[in-house]
Every structure is written in C-alpha cells, then in structure tokens.
Image 1 (cartoon, rainbow, N blue to C red):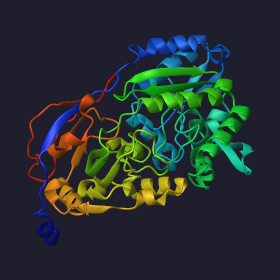
Image 2 (image 1 turned 30 degrees about the vertical axis):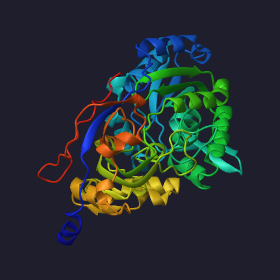
Image 3 (image 1 turned 135 degrees about the vertical axis):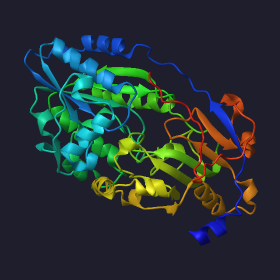
Image 4 (image 1 turned 45 degrees about the horizontal axis):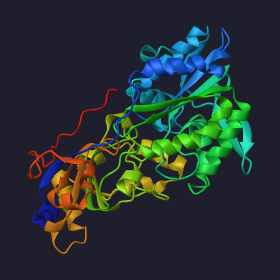
Length: 431
C-alpha cells in the first residue's frame, strides 16, 4: 500500500461540523400497554382456543422494543390457554440454516428467556399452493402445522423495489415464512415485479394458512415505536398500503441534495436488508422515494455490525470500504443471501483501503473535482440514525437549515493512530 499512500497523502480532507437534525418525535410511551389493549380487542386473538399451538414470526431486523413486544404477544396467547412459539421468518438470512437463523434472533435479544416462548427454528417448509405463473408457495413447516400464526413485522419502504407492498406483513408471509426455498422462487423474476409477487404470494398464504392476526409496527425517525396496528387476517392486504404511506412519511433523511462523499460508520443486516438503506444514501435499485432524492458520488463504509454475523450483502452499493470491514465478511453468508435474492451486484467488493483516512482520501480523489478542497463530506453512524451527524463546513450553506442545529465549530477530522475516524454519534434508542 506504499504506492497508494503516496498517491493519496496529498489529498486534503475538509474540516467537519457536528450538526443535529430535528424530526417529529410522536411515539407510543407505553408500548406493552398499547399492544396488550390491541390484542384484547382482536377477534383473531379471541378465536384462539385453549391448548392451541400458536406460531409468532420474528424477522432479522433490529426493531425497537421487538423482544418486549414478542413477550407481550406470547403472554396474550398464554392468557387464552394456548402455547406460543417463535418462528424465524427471514427467508435465507442466517446462512439459510436453522442454527444460523436462531443465532440471528439471539443477537437481536429474541430467545425463550426474553420473550417467554420457545424458538423453533427449521428450514423445512410445506407446499400450500401456487401463485402468479404457477410458482410454488411455501411456508415454514412448524408454523404451517400450528393451530394459528401471528405475523409480526415493521412496515417500511423496501430498499430494492416499490409498490403497494414493500417491507411489512405481506412480505413477511411471502418471503420471510417462505424460508430459503420460497424466497428463491419469489426472487427468480427479479425486483421489477417483486411487489406483485409479494401481493400474490401473501394472499395465497392468507387463503391457505391459519393466519389469525397481523401486527404491523411503524417507527419514527428516531427509531421509536410511532404506531402499532393489530389487523385481522382479512384486513392485512387492504390496510397495509396505507400503513406503508404513513411509515414513509416518517423516514429519516439527509438534508442535502448532493454530496461528493458519504461516509457511513457501520452497515449491517440488522440495520437494513442492504446493510445501508439505499433510499437514504441515494442509490435505490428502483425508483427513489419522493423527498429523499440525493445524488451521492462516493460512498465509504467503515465497519460491519456484529449482529450481521458476517453478512455484508449490500457492500456492492458502496465505492470504498476499509480493511476491517472486509476482514469481517463471511462470504458464505453473503453469497447465500445474494444467490437467493439474485442481487449478485450486492456482493461485489469495492476498493479496499487500510483505514478510514485513506478511504476518505480515495473517495475525494475519485470524486472528479478540479479542486479537492471543495469536496463536500457527510459522516453518519448508519442509515437508521440520522439525528446527529457531521458535515464539511462548506455544506452548511447547501442544507435546509430550518431543521438543523449546529453543535460545534469546524474541526479537523479526528483520526486515531491507526488512521481510523473517531466521531461520537447518538446513543441507541431504548424506547
């Protein structure tokens, strides 16, 4: 890397300013109390008979208060005299193995001791019907052979397609519960018609599986629970599109239209299916969400979250990564994910630089600027946490300052002895 250092050492990096972005913060103060009330009012829940076995889905994303909410649902099932259990509903994640999917849930704090119900993890599926062009519809065998299924998931925009149904309850029933076998079939025709596939397969699951309720969760821009909807089976397909619209209105976003360099401290499957939300970084696979359009020349990634278990699928959307991120990648995890989703570009390896300093300098060097000193730079923790971040001082005039508070004077980027950037971001939301 001596030659690389010689090329890059002359590239200047701009001074940074710490800023804070203010979003609407309406949220549910007492999540268990709210959810318990919704469950008591649910006709599907009231139909649960004593002695019944009820499956509850759990996905691979880190969702605020999810272990607590799963505990609440399991308790409501037990109050009916029935026996709840948790089913990993995450397609091929976790390396498409039962042990891997159990480990993903454990990393998210979802285990029998935390949610009050055993986790039954298996990749076995049952064929329950066909959809669209005759492709088979599969569902997790343990869930299918239970007396009822409660589908639970966060509702939000997808990183790879647009439509009436994106990430949410319909996708959980189709791809999550379909495990690797189902997910492979549904991705086979690409993302262009994925929303239609999710709709058709989800409705087939609703017709043939014993779905008794759907619990959709919406988070605000601070990652707090903004809304919970407890839907009857017949309401899921009809009401989810409106919930998706509300979720999109609360998405965190960056307050600028153009960037030369976006530096992201961490990516991971617990953050987004593509490690970083492509809507936020300005590189959506399909159409961008209106109001989130941003043109980003270079994206730099520093690290991979431990909860990703080595699955760095989505790094292909970036331009430059650090060596420590590269060394954290488990290619078996990445390739299993990408072979299932058919998104092989997501596994492509960007330029690998020894540390953050050289990665940022490489990004500025390749941003096609006549004067490197004019580079605009934004540093964020991840694409879920956009309240506090850092921008180059020349960006202050280019941002919508009506919702921005400046927290510091300009300062030189702080690198440690290894050349890695040391910036302080907000703490994780516990609400």
